[in-house]
Length: 438
Image (cartoon, rainbow, N blue to C red; front, side, top):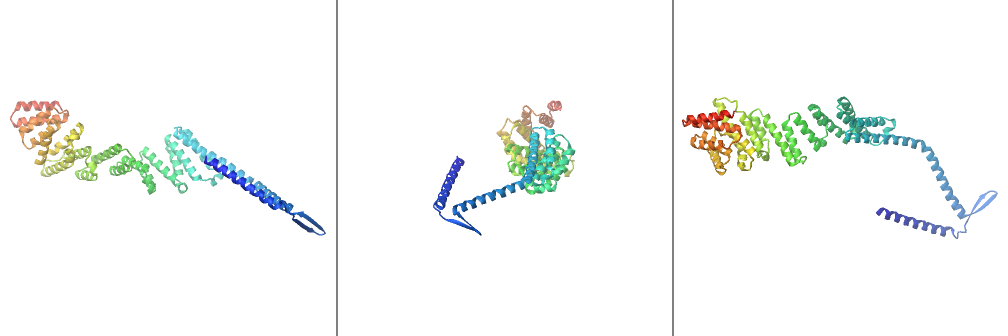
């Protein structure tokens, strides 16, 4: 609508201009009686002034038209050359677009053929004057390399990738060069070549290395290379930038933290990994339980000397401090989480202080029918040599526990309690039930 209105306004102004020109000419030549006298001895020519004026205008127009015609004739070879170069350029651009279309549709052989055709067009001598010629060439090489990667032809892929990463192309088309580096990292990850992937990541400019796509690749490279700490930092950065959904972010971070805990070879490394977690991660039941289980595993092969006993006491105290926040939210845990918490806390019951014993008893009284609380409170009472109360709690737990491991330990504890009070028949029966659960 606005274009139509603008065209109408221009027509009006043109009409007004022509009308003004006609009025000016009418005023100038309508009653002009002037003459122009030309002397060419021995002749004399008297010509109307209007005639001379129109002759001058007509001569100028004819001279201009003649010069333009001569200029156009002289420019015909250059125009023909530009036309031919334009046709070749259009063919090259069309080949690149065809290669991209075939690549997206999964026709990798056709995509490679189209990319190679585009490269042949780009090798033409007239292509040096094309706009964005270097960017087009880089994209053609990159599409050819992508097709070769899809066809599992590593040799052709590396050849075209090397050509795409040429410094001259990188200087003329920096954005496409960054894209080629990111694709090279992805291909290295697919080939499980960690060194090549890290080398390509190091070539990225500082700004490109902070982009989400680059961080995703960095996360994959770190996980592939076993660099759990680096992968965890990258995953946290991606979660901060919203690269994953909240649930996916928590799952990835939780998995990486668990990997880091499993890779700890001693209590010092484990403590370092735990201290590297933030407050929210330390409150996660799965992570706290995993850290406690890993700490407990260091005491499995410990000796019986005084040094080993002191180490067990220190580990137990550390485990209880890690599990303390999770213990406070015991009611909100599901059954599986309660089971894992019970398994992690049980080795830390020896030794156990009076404060933790009272907390266990108080929580058991709040939820009297929970078999895991019955089991933990019974084991704690047994360590404190409260035989009667321990026997009562463990007896209740033996009727409700569904986990075979905890149930076997429960019957073993009941057998030892029966031996303490001299009830050989009950001890024999408890040992038998524990053996049947092996």
